[in-house]
Length: 190
Image (cartoon, rainbow, N blue to C red; front, side, top):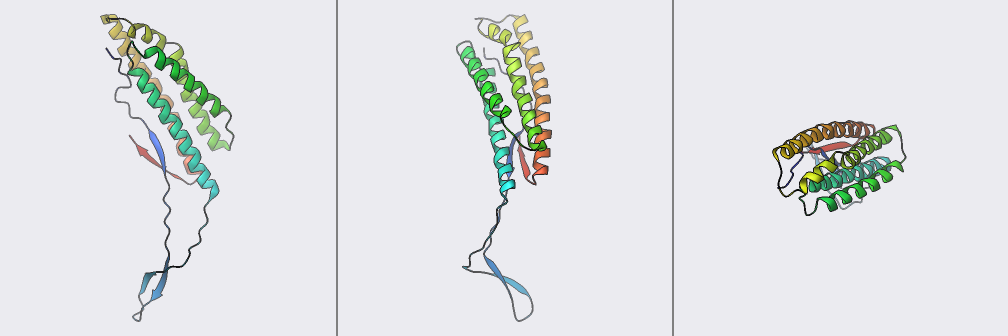
């Protein structure tokens, strides 16, 4: 039996939409006084706001980290007796790397609030996988589940999803504040 978690919790896979429109056009006025646009072969200069671009890059880095972690957690929760221990070890290893990387980041208040929320999410996973999830591993390694095992898995799953949602909401709120402070827009997908 495969332990399936996460129910139908809406996940926030967050990316940045940054649209740049470049046009090489010049305006001209016709004989009747109306304006029109004509295409030219002239070079158009533009200036890229590096702070804004850096903010987009940072947000994307955080988003990819979160998505990668969610993929690992989902794989772990889909594990069976043959691969649960390996998936568990891989998750804990990757969480340690992510936490270490996040703790080395520096920046302004909005950026660091975002980083702090991501650290909290990663720490939540690490704590859960190092404590209560060990009971799940024990159950998954059994050849047959009892009614008590099924009830435990169901309760664990519901509790995990609820706690995970709280951590997601903190990330979401801090990410919105970061985006607003850096004048970038977020594109949300479920």
